[in-house]
Image 1 (cartoon, helix red, strand yellow):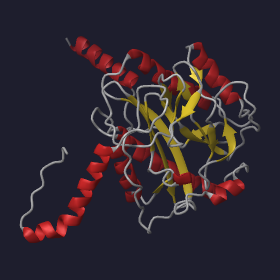
Image 2 (cartoon, one colour):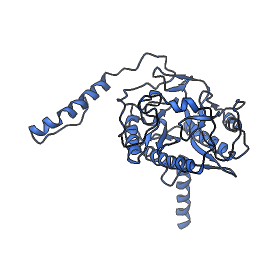
Image 3 (cartoon, helix red, strand yellow):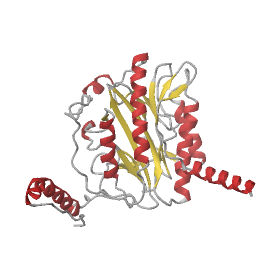
Image 4 (spheres, helix red, strand yellow):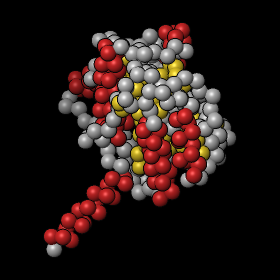
Length: 353
């Protein structure tokens, strides 16, 4: 089975551990037996075995869908745009801070051979350690603590037993619910030695997000973010996904306003101080069209080519905006930052000589 050797100190020790030991064997047997469902897959990626949903301790405050899978409060109030109070902003800021911590830790795990299931398991634990509930868990039945979307997966990828491979790109989307408030962010990471075209896609996606954020201030039309993102990405021959958008967030995981990332969209409303929402462009190599796997979650590019995404949660202020999920010194450096650092070090060394 490929399991590591297990040793017991005596018969009593073996008896006490038998139930847990047997469960591990059953789990691995299921992995070996798993076969992806029959489907017209658009690219080389295939689903792998998904472990059962994990529990969250009773001591952790939970959203209303944690047990039933149905976000009742969201379904009742999702169309309402909230102007948040100082107390609400404080709570959302804390949730975003925790989300950033967890994403940075998850990003450090990304390397060839690591499964997205392993990343999810640690994300689950890190959320609980910080007194937070992983927002995706059981949201409309989603089975995991985070979304992991490699290569041609646009978004909502379910963490599974597939090991990341050298040359992959993978998006990790972290959302947490802490003390009654949600925070949401994601980044796309490089796995080992990645080709230049994929690097260009990832960098362009991040830059398009940051350009949109620069325009976030009171009076900006919500529909204008899509125009900014599309103009930048289309110029570089990439396309913008239309099926998914940014969203309001706070006491609800998803609510108004909807924030489309493509141009000529029909989004209504303007930015006002106290509004909190995400911008999270999903950029495809060629076609913007998507398809969904049989799991009813995993969204992939229709042409099987790669997709990248970045996301921040933003607070509109009196003069601009605050990025509540801003990167920190602990965030995994971008590859272009690493290149710049190496170049600076080389120049310093040359000057010393």
